[in-house]
Length: 69
Image 1 (cartoon, rainbow, N blue to C red):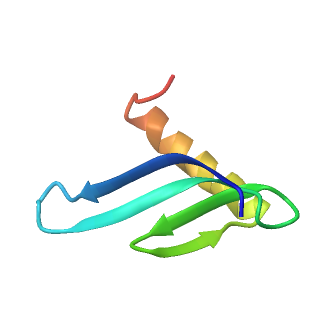
Image 2 (cartoon, one colour):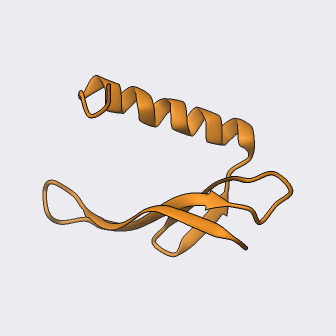
């Protein structure tokens, strides 16, 4: 599987008690390239419709907090 990683980090809860190992990026494992997501060692490649909704939701949150223009 060819991948391009865009994010990889051990993400800690603001409360300091919980954490998740998160990685995501682009995968060409299937016929159509799409987004792969790996959380605590469990991974999947999203279908294109789900990947689009995922990106729209992440962008929406980013806009809400002023992280992106």
